[in-house]
Image (cartoon, rainbow, N blue to C red; front, side, top):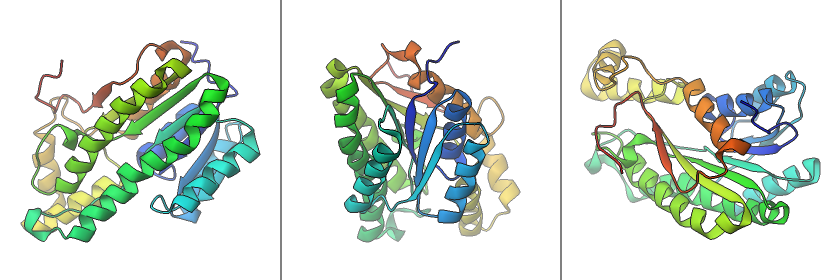
Length: 263
């Protein structure tokens, strides 16, 4: 499939590790230049180095998604460096493994600020640049907790549901400008963050990591954890020229773990 991504410019938040890094690398392999942001400068530069090795440009900008001035600076630097913005992949995330009684107001607020409002801030900054070109792709990485209930991921579920709603609203407002907006719901994806989260669950339940992983895998019909590249494959298509008629959708990459029927 010809993706039409060569020469495009993509912004990827949370791009230093896991799903964000996999998507950034997939876009780069198709010839897109990539601006990455995350909080950890060292991991961010390592990801940028891997992208540059694919013979495309990469810009690494340490950014705190809760700070509007830093989000504005990230987008401004990308525009200054590349002269255009075609794609935004919102992937920045935080997570708290706790049941309801153990969650403070601040933990709810912080998750909302990092992910939901972080996505809103980035979209607000890039949409005018996409409108000017009459073409754009916005992907919001949410999660299956938008559709399911779990013991330790209440803040994830609330925020991911809100991200899906935001994506649908935004998609209708920018469709006439040639911009598509879609949500990707990862299932249990094996990333450094996921491993850390499962270790926390193991500690809370006085189990081994192996036990917790085995229990989680019972929920996944394909019998394995989702890999970051599984998400990147879908992201690549949704960012391509071939996906111009797909917008306002929330698509799961979950190995079949979501049991609801979504019409």
